[in-house]
Amino acid sequence: MTDLQHFDDLYANSEDPWGYENRWYERRKRDLTIASLPRERYTACFEPGCSIGALTAMLATRCDGVLAVDSAGAAVSAARRRNGGARNVRVEQMQVPAEWPSSSFDLIVVSELGYYLNESALGELLDNGERCTTAGAHLVAVHWRGHASDFALAGGASAVRRKIVEASAWRPIVSLCDEFFLLDVVERR
Image (cartoon, rainbow, N blue to C red):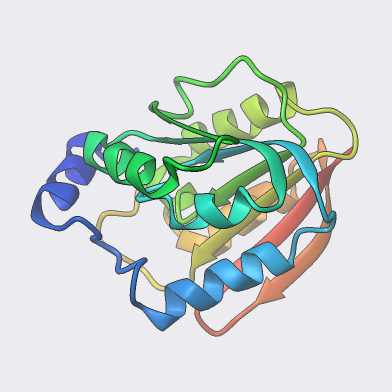
């Protein structure tokens, strides 16, 4: 896994280290992520690696409840500020996959997180996701196709996609191969 101090350092240098607020790529990716959701409404969503909560705010419009978590304290503070007026959003500091909520979810959204986990940790994330969902739940994974030196998973987005679509508990239902990112929705068998 990527060292968690790395993320704290990123937020110490910038309130929005990936440009979620103003980059066209990020706005477009969020819009396509929301558009890919197979159901109009979900009961309970879990968003690990929520960063500053930009996607969280959009998920809140489609979900009765959203639990958004991040390992970086500054990200959690920013996500809380952004989503503070939404009664259906809870933002907590948590280090997934080692820490995992005890709740059940019908939607899990993993955006730009999978390649920061090594193979074992990504497997643990999928196992945890399987344990907290039932048949018909959805897992959305969306990851940038580029490469960065801080990725822990060799192969980046392609390796994340392969691990997710090959997981026996999940059935692929949506797959988008964009020039810049891969987006997959899988359904719990």
